[in-house]
Image 1: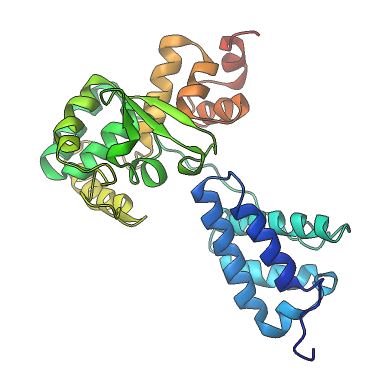
Image 2: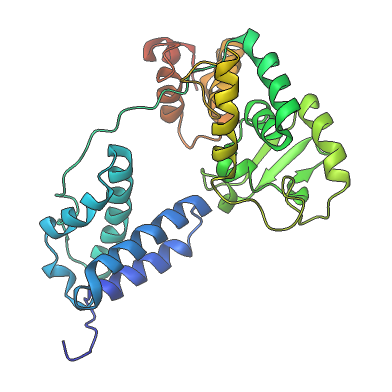
Length: 298
């Protein structure tokens, strides 16, 4: 290798591909995932592997790496998808097809069912959470009332995100999964809960930690798992009901009241109505034909 890095080396091309993606308007979540896949793949290849021509990389070698993430189909397919993104960019850089990553094994991901809450469950669950874990209660309330994602949107909210007398939450493209500017309405019951908190914060302070640094990414997941055991023992929730179930429940409620799939798409922040159709269908509440029939015609 002579210590020299070739222009078509895996390390160089992948670094350039990653840099290009990090400079784009992708969400912070997607950028972090790409960075994660890149770092682990470079570590897997080692110094000699990184200096090797990308043309020499075989499908079997890539699959050997992906097997490290074989504990679940979702985990495996997420890494496979991220590698393919980097490979596609590298392919364009050298103006040559690189099929090695595309030929890797594909695994079927089973849909995770976030069982919606029944209407009569909501008040007892919120009452329990308010009495036992204030931060988790506020997170669940916003997941339901504002239809935001708990871990990558709600967890990172600061005082500055609240506008127009706290009636709206404004997220830029890097702060939400859709990658576009998103404005979310804040219902009165959410605003009444948050306004006393917001009054005590500085502009850059996180609404949960009270300082500029937010809690880590696993914070709400861990808190939910602790409280879930108690709620299950009290018969307040069912095993398949999750933190995300609040968002799913709200989506169903919006659709039932409006029969407007495009309204659900907008309020959920989905990039395509196709995602919304699949999202609602996965809950087992409606079939696709019913949803299509309910969608407004442009």
